[in-house]
Length: 190
Image (cartoon, rainbow, N blue to C red; front, side):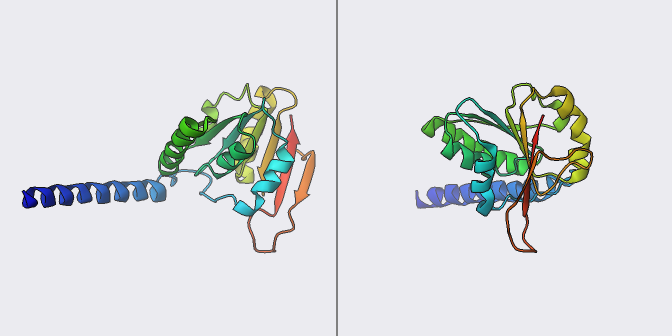
């Protein structure tokens, strides 16, 4: 009886290790074809994003390149009645954020959706806010689509990078150290 129990534990341990290995591979290699390598939004600027975005209960917030969902999970704690949509093309981060959003939605009754998609496939017609942390080249490829598809008044909050072909409505200097990421936030209104 003890040997059967030990065999089951060994097999279960092997399955868990294999799953963890595959998950790590997805995290590391999932974004290789991406034009934007993964960079986490620093936790220290989440409050700044919240104060700049001015999200309310009727907001539909899209985070393009949502990664691990850090920004959306933070905002949903502060404004739980808004709707949040994360768009990510790295399968590892998407799995992590989907699992976390499932539990948050189920037990805390929030509205967070995480989807695997490329920018060209996203329906942004209901967006009131868009948050990005993407390189300028990627931002510029999205500009025409934003101008043609966003409803008037939609706010775009870009961390660190701005469009080269459009001036921001407002620029926020976060007064972070010279070598720190995310030193500026750019606010656009469409």
